[in-house]
Length: 357
Ligand code: COI
Image (cartoon, rainbow, N blue to C red; front, side, top):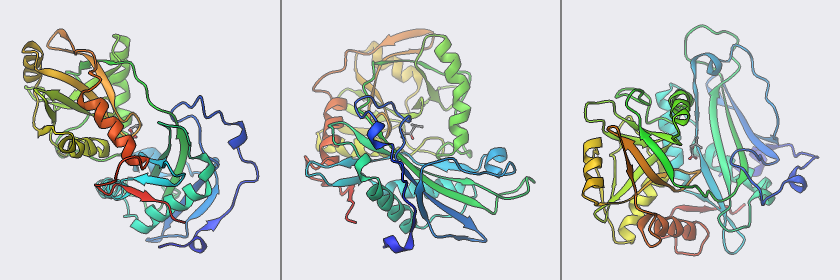
């Protein structure tokens, strides 16, 4: 365990806490007082620093700005029913970050730097962890190529690891109106689709903008094959309940290994649902609508947790989902997840790391 003495700590003398309205939180708009920063230089990570949140100085030659060596995670910490704080599935997030770093040819991050860094930072900004039901502290660890003084095309020698955090409220979404995207793709085999690297998100903005201009909320990504096999929904994984079975596309190098997705697949067994990780082509999906076997469709991700889908346009036709069933999988699994994270249900899958500093 990295102890506090191994972190250099510089506290802010101007907390923004008092001026923060915890009743009107917008995702990504509010950041906590401190951040963690550690540099990778000459082949090693330097002493992590806990410092006031603020701008960073970056050389214009920083290779993340030119060649996109930048990866991130999205995680959450929760206030438990007895006032403690727990971080959700820290090991699984670390494994995914490690895979992203490897794919982008960036240096590995030691687990203790990641885990202890998160814990020390959350401990320091403990007052920023919301106490209200459905609220949480969103955690954004990220690594990017930093201050190398040359911009030749090569992998960087210098990197920075930052963690910023911010309180977020519950995500209430109207049901999403989606179109299956049949012109652009998000990822191809052999590419970086499974990695949480910045470019995957940047590349999605333009097709999403076009879809919004056509009145849709987001696109459904496919594998671009003739079957148009469904892969993801916007920036989320996608799950369906068809014939009482929880169905989702199988992981591959084109699909992000979503931690919320994985949690739903695990909870499905606890709730008595069968699961199938299988390819779903648009014709398959259209058939499920025509046969009326499709009961639910939703996006899953750390930020949204579950975002119900109301309509899907594909093959030139709009297909409507039935209203979200109150005793259906999505609502039950989402509240089970919330109960586990807040200590209101037993953590049988050992997903919570309680901050014990
Ligand atoms: C998340 O769901 O946490 C994500 O990382 C996706 C997004 C907010 C970029």
